[in-house]
Amino acid sequence: MESLSETPPAIPEDSEVNSKSVLNIKWNRLSNDPVSCPYCKNIGENKLHITVLTTTKLRTDDYEKLLDLGWIKDCARHLFKPDTINSCCPFYTTRLDSLEFKISKQQKKHMKRFNQYLNGERELELKTEVVVPKPEQEELANKKGQDTQTTDQQAQDIPQKDEKPQPNEFGEIGYIETGEEQKIAIEAGNSRPYTDFFDEFVPNTTKESERAHKYTVSLHRCICYQEVLDLYQKFQYARFDEVKTKTDFMEQRTNSCLFDPKDPAFRSTKTVKDETRRDEGRVFKDEGIYPEYYGTYYMHHRIDGKLVACSILDITEHNICSELTFYDPAYSGLCLGHVTAVREMEYMRKIRKEFNNNCRYYYMSEYLYNSPRSQYKICMHPIKLLCPFTYTYVPLTASLISQIKAREPQLNPDSPPKPLVPETDSPQETSGESEPDQDSARPVGESKLSKWTKSLKIMSSKDTMLPLKSYGPARRLHLRRVLESYYENMGDTLLNDFVCEYL
Image (tube, rainbow, N blue to C red):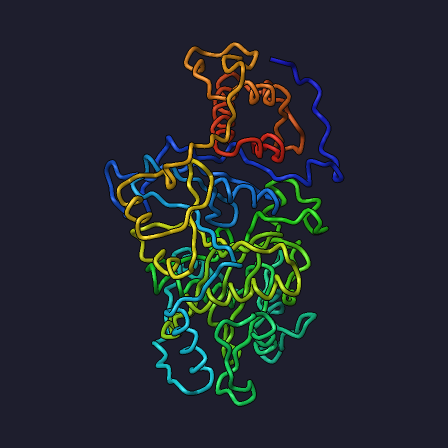
């Protein structure tokens, strides 16, 4: 092993490394390490086989490539790729061409009812407000706080009741967390008219001034603030009986890894150390109809100033990915899940006409034939599923659903499989290192991978780049197997566009 008596220099701020996507090869899960299935919740041999990719930084153009390779963004910093052969519940990437979208009769009915409610022509019986129990962590913290007496200095720091929060730069008052908490009440009503955002399929012919309810929309960076957190907690508790903490929300829904290399706020963000303060690079403001930089955004839907629904959208040059929509359970009678899905298609039509003609494809996360949460996607016609063997999109039809139920994972059997790792002339080539015998089985295309690993340098916790051979034999063997698994599932995207880190 090469001696490292001299510490490698730290990565300069303006290094090209800082503008690349980052793959964390320490925190990983490979498909041969199954997990319990969150869909069917079966035990025993019914397991979900997935490869998990953890990233602290992911360029939006690299994200587009991964989507078409079958990777699905599950939460803020994790993507996964399912093994449709061995998993108990096979699921697939979904995509819709916005140029081909045709609104269904059911969707038209939902949109008409929504317009009737706005016009005062239909009554809505609001359900009882959902009361979310406090998470155990908060209860313990509150109990501990009650046992501690407040000092005179602490008492001076508590704001008086008559002190009013100051509005931000565009007139809205919000609860924002950028570094330290700023506890501010929400003042709604400053959002834009929804007609600014959408090219409607079912226009509301009643004049806005004559409507009974005011419906507005706004677009914001995904930052943790109280109004959205409260809505998310209500939704999760009412629908899944889950009590989500603020930490859960930040880790899963706000701390997004996506970044636009043109955005100056992210150019110097290098490692996971900076990731804990990523929100400080984001400014809570009205992003207008179409943001200046690509990334992850919240689309707020308000009725009479109240936030009733929020969509998490990954906006890239060619795609809009609807990661999740959560809404107020009290307004479930408006079918807001269907309404916001149609609104997002209307948003894409608006974007193509006025801002970005390249924005074409709409992604809706995964499709699972036996999940009620996936059934609304069938209405998004003509939705297509990605075949994990040929990497082509196949229209979702009744016969295709039957094929999936019959556990035939290759969706277009007439086409030959397209491996991501090309065959090479010398698959027997080794990495040039002497390793245990159990490492003799090498994947197809190993020659190209081994050439890459010889020159590979891995980002360390000290912002330095270390060669793979600087690690001990056991860890080096493990890391190479991890890299092989990612290479088989990512192809040349991994070799050319990603920086690997081991923190």
